[in-house]
Length: 169
Image 1 (cartoon, rainbow, N blue to C red):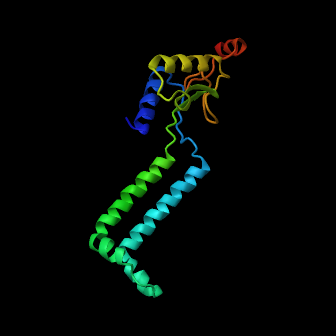
Image 2 (image 1 turned 90 degrees about the vertical axis):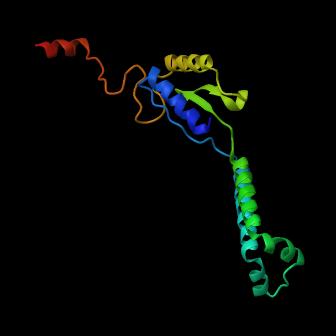
Image 3 (image 1 turned 30 degrees about the vertical axis):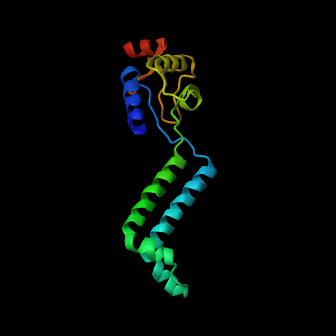
């Protein structure tokens, strides 16, 4: 199952059991060096494609002789070079930007970490950790706009005893 598919499945399961809890997904941050390497791979991919399409024209423009290996190998198979560069460049760039993270937080508490365990949580681990975090937490999930845990969306808090008496009169 894809990363998005797993997230959507977890969101639906949580919404069924805890309809007042909002599930928010985000991308785990990529280390800056890996992001820079992924960008470099993408640029190299584009250079190879540009060289395969118009390398001899660039060489003639700069007054440099076209290398024999280029004429023998690249010119007869331009499309192969372009598709190969596209495929390998994208595969390399994607591999560098994958974190394989699936971190679950509730009330700021880490419920489960795929990075720490190397696997997705079992259903018992997930529900047990989530229930414990929601019961011991501060009563709120996430940031602004989230409802109190014990208060379903759209529900108003029960009026205090003195307010109930005033309303009945």
